[in-house]
Length: 289
Length: 90
Image (tube, rainbow over all chains, first blue to last red; front, side, top):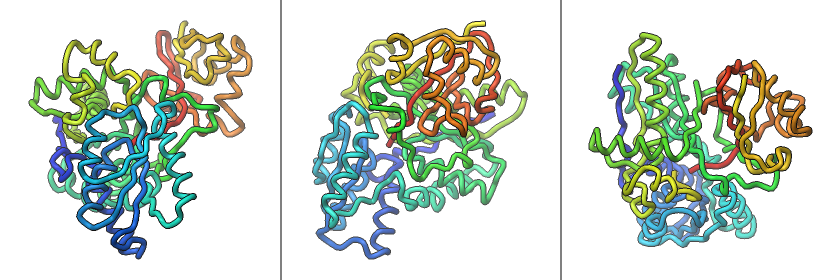
């Protein structure tokens, strides 16, 4: 049994979202939707905004990000550094609320372009075209792929790729479980499922809470010397759960998981200092993934 | 047979504000029926004619039941069920 980390923190702005951001912009340009000077709008908890901001800066677009207020300060700093304008949405409701606010702004400003990572096929396509093929080329014996479930782009793109090229690969989702404030909705029918999501592409889906995510993030740092963000800890937790089941079944496996980003933009959260319990308390109420 | 059920904020009006309750059952459907018997009305917020409601996610020991056996998923003593509304990530 072998576990492999795919180091997506090595992308240009430091996260896996660089793939989706570039492809969404390229596709929009190919579709004639963008011209220099135009304004992009995007709901994001940080990484996609940062990726888009870098590309927008290079290509002469303006970018407005709608981001929940309960995200780490580093995300705001990076977005501002890349020239993006930030509109904050309330902590209560998390990214659901950011999506709602962004959709409202898009309706009021029809000349703005919302690429919309949650429903834009170019997001998943980036992973079909690049992440999936890289995994297969580097690890032809791959049996399992584990990634975070957010926009679902990574899992859908890679999932579809393996369905087409190596269908026995298990596609496993790790879903961050947040504090209660994020789940506060007016009613259950106001929930949100990304338009990209196709459950048939997944083999299983795990909910991972902050304590487990933090514990694994620290283990990755201490045991492997990999300094990753907290969502990676969540993904690793699901990966180890899968590995345990495989081991108990007496089977062999090559399990690849995504390291989404480095821990740099989460240092201020307290995730990497004090005891695990102190760190858990510190990130309570935050959108840590 | 005691199953721990974690209830999201939005459904605690049914459980008298309790965020964790105990239920019985040998399948998820059985557990939901048992919850509804003790906390009338909660069942209807979880299930509709087509099964588990679209924006409701249920996890058995942190695994999404839609990838197990759905409402027929077998449940054992000391299992933990978590109910959460569907939210965006990313």
